[in-house]
Length: 180
Image 1 (cartoon, helix red, strand yellow):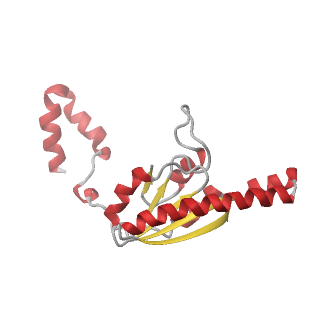
Image 2 (image 1 turned 180 degrees about the horizontal axis):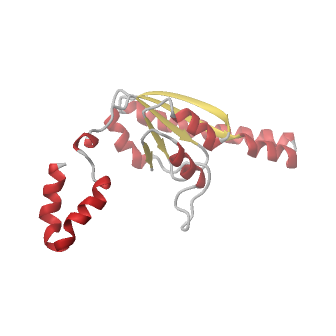
Image 3 (image 1 turned 90 degrees about the vertical axis):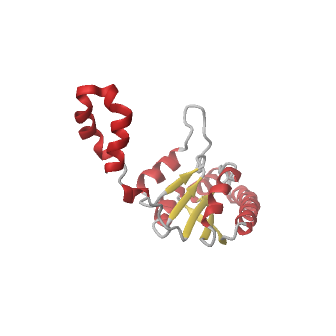
């Protein structure tokens, strides 16, 4: 803590004056300890994808730092959506949509897989049906790092720059998360 105390001394003592000690006491819990500066070892990474997953090229530079890690790409199809389409438009339309979604997922996964393997990452890819939020929360517990698009689960807007599914996931997982 001495590093932080000296930093605060240099930067804020003249500004805060008599209130300095009170400020340090109140905000001590927000200061990182030296052992908290250590980055955790990352040997396994989960990257869930769906039709809304945004441009992943911005996160590739970060993932390059984890050479040798095992990456699991999971293209998630929302079972409830297909069930609703089947109930309203019929089984034939649901199957057509399913085929289109599978093709889209295959292209997305292959493009990302190729990029990640180029960085020396071991990549496993799969498709999965289920509830996007709950499934990601469940799967994330088995990994050292979760990397998720801010638009995973739904489109983002100016008023909501992160999808509700991503907010739910981030609030419930216990592993570090990179939102791109």
